[in-house]
Length: 104
Image 1 (cartoon, rainbow, N blue to C red):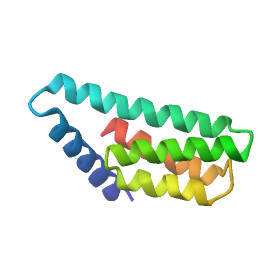
Image 2 (image 1 turned 120 degrees about the horizontal axis):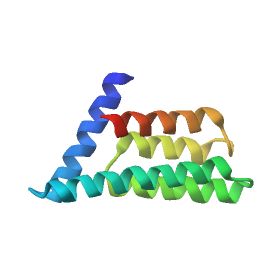
Image 3 (image 1 turned 90 degrees about the horizontal axis):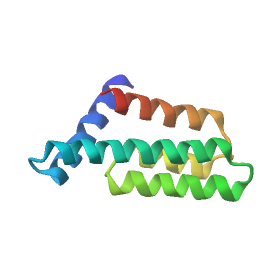
Image 4 (image 1 turned 180 degrees about the vertical axis):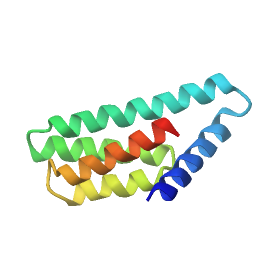
């Protein structure tokens, strides 16, 4: 799993680099925006008290992942959409993805 996570971080960084071009500050800004967006949706998922809030947060997470071409995160968002609201295993996997990407 660690190798796959490293590959995902590299693929995401390549997508961000392509969008930012030679602008290192823009690259950092895009990377931070991605991390903050994922953090926000994960927080909302954790605080969801009904199916509707869970589904909306998971859909937003999938949207963020799609806009950055983060295939692994798209799959995790799909897992959340297909599973039970508040599923701690899904939340842990999303957090692990986020932690691995943020520290890569």
